[in-house]
Picture (cartoon, rainbow, N blue to C red):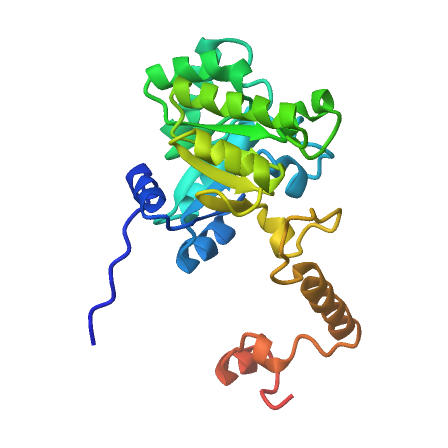
Length: 286
Protein backbone atom coordinates (compact mmCIF):
# COMPACT_ATOMS: atom_id res chain seq x y z
CA UNK A 1 0.00 0.00 0.00
CA UNK A 2 1.25 3.53 -0.75
CA UNK A 3 2.33 5.56 2.26
CA UNK A 4 -0.24 7.97 3.64
CA UNK A 5 0.58 11.51 2.56
CA UNK A 6 1.94 13.44 5.52
CA UNK A 7 -0.12 16.49 6.38
CA UNK A 8 1.58 19.84 6.39
CA UNK A 9 0.76 23.08 8.16
CA UNK A 10 -1.64 25.17 6.09
CA UNK A 11 0.03 28.44 5.19
CA UNK A 12 -0.90 31.48 3.14
CA UNK A 13 0.99 29.84 0.30
CA UNK A 14 -1.21 26.75 0.67
CA UNK A 15 -4.36 28.85 0.44
CA UNK A 16 -3.13 30.70 -2.61
CA UNK A 17 -2.27 27.41 -4.31
CA UNK A 18 -5.77 26.12 -3.54
CA UNK A 19 -7.24 29.23 -5.15
CA UNK A 20 -5.10 28.79 -8.27
CA UNK A 21 -6.10 25.13 -8.52
CA UNK A 22 -9.75 25.99 -7.83
CA UNK A 23 -9.84 23.72 -4.76
CA UNK A 24 -12.48 25.10 -2.37
CA UNK A 25 -11.14 26.18 1.02
CA UNK A 26 -12.98 24.96 4.13
CA UNK A 27 -13.33 27.50 6.92
CA UNK A 28 -15.15 27.34 10.26
CA UNK A 29 -15.27 29.49 13.35
CA UNK A 30 -13.68 28.04 16.46
CA UNK A 31 -13.47 29.33 20.02
CA UNK A 32 -11.95 26.65 22.25
CA UNK A 33 -9.25 23.99 22.61
CA UNK A 34 -11.24 20.74 22.25
CA UNK A 35 -13.15 21.97 19.20
CA UNK A 36 -9.88 23.07 17.59
CA UNK A 37 -8.46 19.57 18.09
CA UNK A 38 -11.51 17.96 16.48
CA UNK A 39 -11.52 20.33 13.51
CA UNK A 40 -7.78 19.93 13.00
CA UNK A 41 -8.04 16.13 13.02
CA UNK A 42 -10.96 16.27 10.57
CA UNK A 43 -8.87 18.26 8.09
CA UNK A 44 -10.44 21.75 8.14
CA UNK A 45 -8.20 24.16 6.24
CA UNK A 46 -8.86 27.37 8.20
CA UNK A 47 -10.48 28.50 11.41
CA UNK A 48 -11.61 31.97 12.40
CA UNK A 49 -11.56 32.82 16.07
CA UNK A 50 -14.46 35.17 15.46
CA UNK A 51 -15.66 37.99 17.64
CA UNK A 52 -18.93 36.07 17.21
CA UNK A 53 -17.66 34.23 20.27
CA UNK A 54 -19.13 37.15 22.20
CA UNK A 55 -22.54 35.74 21.26
CA UNK A 56 -21.97 31.98 20.86
CA UNK A 57 -19.68 31.52 23.88
CA UNK A 58 -20.12 34.50 26.19
CA UNK A 59 -23.85 35.11 25.71
CA UNK A 60 -23.85 38.73 24.57
CA UNK A 61 -26.68 39.83 22.25
CA UNK A 62 -24.21 41.18 19.65
CA UNK A 63 -20.49 41.00 18.88
CA UNK A 64 -19.86 44.58 19.95
CA UNK A 65 -19.19 44.01 23.69
CA UNK A 66 -16.27 41.68 22.90
CA UNK A 67 -13.05 42.94 24.47
CA UNK A 68 -9.55 42.50 23.13
CA UNK A 69 -8.58 40.56 26.26
CA UNK A 70 -11.47 38.10 25.88
CA UNK A 71 -10.75 37.69 22.18
CA UNK A 72 -7.09 36.94 22.80
CA UNK A 73 -8.03 34.40 25.49
CA UNK A 74 -10.27 32.48 23.05
CA UNK A 75 -7.62 32.71 20.35
CA UNK A 76 -4.91 31.29 22.60
CA UNK A 77 -7.16 28.33 23.46
CA UNK A 78 -7.72 27.56 19.78
CA UNK A 79 -4.03 27.88 18.99
CA UNK A 80 -3.19 25.30 21.67
CA UNK A 81 -5.50 22.83 19.96
CA UNK A 82 -4.41 23.26 16.36
CA UNK A 83 -1.59 21.51 14.59
CA UNK A 84 -2.19 22.09 10.89
CA UNK A 85 -5.01 24.61 10.43
CA UNK A 86 -4.54 28.23 9.35
CA UNK A 87 -5.80 30.41 12.23
CA UNK A 88 -7.26 33.87 11.64
CA UNK A 89 -7.76 36.12 14.65
CA UNK A 90 -10.74 38.47 14.52
CA UNK A 91 -10.16 42.03 15.74
CA UNK A 92 -13.02 43.22 17.97
CA UNK A 93 -14.96 46.46 17.74
CA UNK A 94 -12.91 49.61 18.42
CA UNK A 95 -9.53 47.85 18.43
CA UNK A 96 -8.46 49.25 15.03
CA UNK A 97 -10.62 52.30 14.41
CA UNK A 98 -8.92 54.84 16.70
CA UNK A 99 -5.55 55.16 14.95
CA UNK A 100 -3.18 53.29 12.66
CA UNK A 101 -0.73 52.92 15.51
CA UNK A 102 -3.32 51.34 17.81
CA UNK A 103 -4.52 49.03 15.03
CA UNK A 104 -0.96 47.82 14.41
CA UNK A 105 -0.33 47.38 18.14
CA UNK A 106 -3.51 45.36 18.71
CA UNK A 107 -3.09 43.24 15.59
CA UNK A 108 0.46 42.52 16.69
CA UNK A 109 -0.89 40.94 19.87
CA UNK A 110 -2.71 38.31 17.80
CA UNK A 111 0.38 37.58 15.75
CA UNK A 112 2.58 37.40 18.85
CA UNK A 113 0.53 34.51 20.30
CA UNK A 114 0.74 32.52 17.06
CA UNK A 115 -2.04 33.60 14.67
CA UNK A 116 -1.40 33.19 10.96
CA UNK A 117 -3.38 36.33 10.08
CA UNK A 118 -5.87 38.84 11.42
CA UNK A 119 -9.24 40.00 10.09
CA UNK A 120 -11.02 43.31 10.41
CA UNK A 121 -14.33 44.65 9.13
CA UNK A 122 -14.98 47.39 6.60
CA UNK A 123 -14.30 48.33 3.00
CA UNK A 124 -12.96 51.59 1.60
CA UNK A 125 -13.39 53.34 4.96
CA UNK A 126 -10.66 51.16 6.54
CA UNK A 127 -8.39 50.95 3.48
CA UNK A 128 -5.88 53.45 4.91
CA UNK A 129 -5.71 51.48 8.15
CA UNK A 130 -5.22 48.24 6.25
CA UNK A 131 -2.44 49.78 4.17
CA UNK A 132 -0.63 50.93 7.32
CA UNK A 133 -0.97 47.48 8.88
CA UNK A 134 0.28 45.74 5.74
CA UNK A 135 3.22 48.15 5.58
CA UNK A 136 4.03 47.10 9.14
CA UNK A 137 4.25 43.49 7.94
CA UNK A 138 0.86 42.23 9.13
CA UNK A 139 -1.13 39.67 7.07
CA UNK A 140 -4.54 41.35 6.93
CA UNK A 141 -7.85 39.89 5.79
CA UNK A 142 -10.80 42.14 4.98
CA UNK A 143 -14.52 41.67 5.62
CA UNK A 144 -17.30 43.32 3.61
CA UNK A 145 -21.02 42.88 3.06
CA UNK A 146 -22.82 42.37 6.34
CA UNK A 147 -20.30 43.53 8.93
CA UNK A 148 -21.78 42.82 12.38
CA UNK A 149 -19.74 45.51 14.13
CA UNK A 150 -21.43 48.06 11.85
CA UNK A 151 -24.88 46.44 11.92
CA UNK A 152 -26.58 49.45 13.58
CA UNK A 153 -25.34 51.71 10.77
CA UNK A 154 -26.45 49.16 8.18
CA UNK A 155 -29.98 49.00 9.55
CA UNK A 156 -29.51 45.75 11.45
CA UNK A 157 -28.49 42.24 10.42
CA UNK A 158 -29.69 42.46 6.82
CA UNK A 159 -28.60 41.08 3.47
CA UNK A 160 -26.30 43.53 1.70
CA UNK A 161 -25.70 44.21 -1.99
CA UNK A 162 -29.30 43.57 -3.07
CA UNK A 163 -29.49 46.55 -5.43
CA UNK A 164 -27.27 47.35 -8.41
CA UNK A 165 -25.86 50.42 -6.66
CA UNK A 166 -25.19 48.49 -3.43
CA UNK A 167 -23.49 45.70 -5.39
CA UNK A 168 -21.26 48.20 -7.19
CA UNK A 169 -20.37 49.80 -3.85
CA UNK A 170 -19.25 46.42 -2.50
CA UNK A 171 -17.13 45.83 -5.60
CA UNK A 172 -15.50 49.22 -4.98
CA UNK A 173 -14.91 48.22 -1.34
CA UNK A 174 -13.31 44.95 -2.44
CA UNK A 175 -10.99 46.75 -4.87
CA UNK A 176 -10.04 49.29 -2.21
CA UNK A 177 -9.11 46.52 0.21
CA UNK A 178 -7.08 44.68 -2.42
CA UNK A 179 -5.26 47.89 -3.34
CA UNK A 180 -4.52 48.36 0.37
CA UNK A 181 -2.81 44.96 0.45
CA UNK A 182 -5.18 42.39 1.96
CA UNK A 183 -4.37 38.78 1.09
CA UNK A 184 -8.04 37.85 1.19
CA UNK A 185 -11.49 38.95 2.23
CA UNK A 186 -14.70 37.58 3.65
CA UNK A 187 -17.94 38.56 1.95
CA UNK A 188 -20.96 38.07 4.20
CA UNK A 189 -24.69 37.87 3.41
CA UNK A 190 -24.94 39.03 -0.19
CA UNK A 191 -26.85 37.61 -3.18
CA UNK A 192 -24.81 35.15 -5.31
CA UNK A 193 -24.77 37.63 -8.21
CA UNK A 194 -23.07 40.23 -6.03
CA UNK A 195 -20.58 37.65 -4.84
CA UNK A 196 -19.73 36.77 -8.45
CA UNK A 197 -19.08 40.43 -9.28
CA UNK A 198 -16.74 40.75 -6.29
CA UNK A 199 -14.97 37.46 -6.98
CA UNK A 200 -14.31 38.49 -10.59
CA UNK A 201 -13.18 42.01 -9.64
CA UNK A 202 -10.23 41.04 -7.41
CA UNK A 203 -7.35 38.58 -7.52
CA UNK A 204 -7.03 37.92 -3.78
CA UNK A 205 -8.73 35.04 -1.95
CA UNK A 206 -12.48 35.63 -1.57
CA UNK A 207 -14.40 33.63 1.02
CA UNK A 208 -18.18 33.38 1.31
CA UNK A 209 -20.35 33.51 4.41
CA UNK A 210 -23.89 33.36 3.11
CA UNK A 211 -22.83 34.69 -0.28
CA UNK A 212 -23.39 31.65 -2.47
CA UNK A 213 -20.98 29.24 -4.15
CA UNK A 214 -18.94 31.54 -6.43
CA UNK A 215 -16.01 32.06 -4.07
CA UNK A 216 -12.70 30.44 -3.17
CA UNK A 217 -14.23 28.75 -0.14
CA UNK A 218 -16.95 28.82 2.48
CA UNK A 219 -17.17 29.95 6.10
CA UNK A 220 -19.89 28.88 8.53
CA UNK A 221 -20.33 29.65 12.23
CA UNK A 222 -19.69 26.24 13.80
CA UNK A 223 -22.44 26.62 16.41
CA UNK A 224 -24.97 27.09 13.60
CA UNK A 225 -23.93 24.06 11.55
CA UNK A 226 -23.88 21.67 14.52
CA UNK A 227 -27.08 22.97 16.15
CA UNK A 228 -25.33 24.27 19.25
CA UNK A 229 -26.84 27.78 19.35
CA UNK A 230 -30.57 27.72 19.89
CA UNK A 231 -31.22 31.46 19.42
CA UNK A 232 -31.50 31.35 15.63
CA UNK A 233 -30.17 29.65 12.49
CA UNK A 234 -29.41 31.72 9.38
CA UNK A 235 -30.96 30.72 6.06
CA UNK A 236 -27.57 30.01 4.49
CA UNK A 237 -26.55 27.35 7.05
CA UNK A 238 -26.83 23.62 6.39
CA UNK A 239 -27.28 21.87 9.74
CA UNK A 240 -25.09 18.75 9.90
CA UNK A 241 -26.25 17.59 13.33
CA UNK A 242 -28.40 18.83 16.20
CA UNK A 243 -26.04 18.96 19.15
CA UNK A 244 -28.59 20.81 21.27
CA UNK A 245 -30.99 17.87 20.97
CA UNK A 246 -28.22 15.33 21.58
CA UNK A 247 -26.97 17.15 24.68
CA UNK A 248 -30.48 17.74 26.02
CA UNK A 249 -31.10 13.99 25.77
CA UNK A 250 -27.80 13.19 27.50
CA UNK A 251 -28.44 15.65 30.34
CA UNK A 252 -32.01 14.40 30.82
CA UNK A 253 -30.80 10.81 31.00
CA UNK A 254 -28.10 11.80 33.50
CA UNK A 255 -30.69 13.47 35.73
CA UNK A 256 -32.87 10.35 35.60
CA UNK A 257 -29.94 8.04 36.36
CA UNK A 258 -28.76 10.07 39.36
CA UNK A 259 -32.26 10.57 40.78
CA UNK A 260 -33.00 6.84 40.48
CA UNK A 261 -29.55 5.93 41.89
CA UNK A 262 -28.80 3.97 38.72
CA UNK A 263 -25.56 5.97 38.48
CA UNK A 264 -22.89 5.41 39.56
CA UNK A 265 -22.56 1.63 39.25
CA UNK A 266 -19.68 -0.47 40.68
CA UNK A 267 -17.74 -0.15 37.40
CA UNK A 268 -17.63 3.60 37.93
CA UNK A 269 -16.10 3.33 41.41
CA UNK A 270 -12.53 2.91 42.68
CA UNK A 271 -11.68 -0.14 44.84
CA UNK A 272 -9.69 -0.88 47.98
CA UNK A 273 -7.90 -4.15 48.63
CA UNK A 274 -9.49 -6.60 51.11
CA UNK A 275 -6.52 -6.08 53.43
CA UNK A 276 -7.11 -2.32 53.62
CA UNK A 277 -10.82 -2.83 54.07
CA UNK A 278 -10.09 -5.23 56.96
CA UNK A 279 -8.01 -2.51 58.67
CA UNK A 280 -11.06 -0.29 58.52
CA UNK A 281 -13.28 -3.01 59.93
CA UNK A 282 -15.18 -3.40 56.69
CA UNK A 283 -16.07 -6.83 55.35
CA UNK A 284 -14.92 -7.11 51.73
CA UNK A 285 -18.08 -9.10 50.99
CA UNK A 286 -20.40 -6.24 52.07
